[in-house]
Length: 315
Image 1 (cartoon, rainbow, N blue to C red):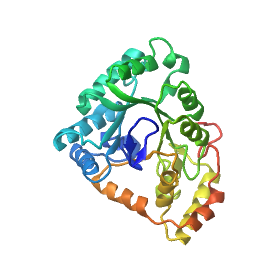
Image 2: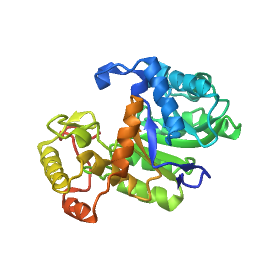
Image 3: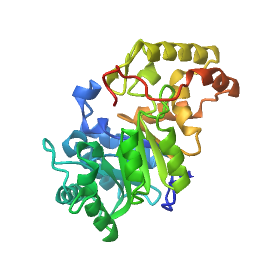
């Protein structure tokens, strides 16, 4: 277990990502039925994966609802478990006002069956301007009020664009920062954000260590990174990484996961789970022995900066 910044919470190295448990066939290419989703959460709670990440918007609320049913079936949330969720605009709208944030929190409490939400993130705040979010009557004001009232335990921000996350971090209001697809084998553009979180005592959670699948299954199977077609340079680098891993008898996926988990500044790494069997697979990747020599061989391939996008896209 690792400290989550200065929140007083401790978390395991792996956080269970649950967007697929809301059943997103358009994004993931497969359905997840309710029983499988509930069984996945039960297995996580019972077998050493007590940190669960969800969002108000995942599956139109289905992810939270299924997690709530699993918690009820379990007989309540175990004392060592932590469920993090995120506030989102009203589906199909751009309403991310303070009033909408309050309603988002109430919806999450109802679905999850929790009176107090231990950790709530402001989710993808790039949907509105920084001034709108931090101004009077905005999302941040509502979240601070809810934390003061004890409805929220701890407050975080979760998103992609690094400069925007830095701006929110520098308000001093957030205790946890979640970043996705920006700290992987092929993209270390979150380095400044991670360093500043560490300096401020803010917990850092790293999501999408596989970059959407390419760093788990390889570029032949998944020639995309962070929802976009990967550039030729990135694909070439990942192919060379595959060869380095093969030379050492290690799966690329194990290297991708442990690149994140071996960094002491990363409190936890979010990995998507869609079945109980996936938990065992992730544990195997986490426990795979990786020799220091392999990290040395990979060092020149792990380049800084943003990766995986066509020049016209900046993520």
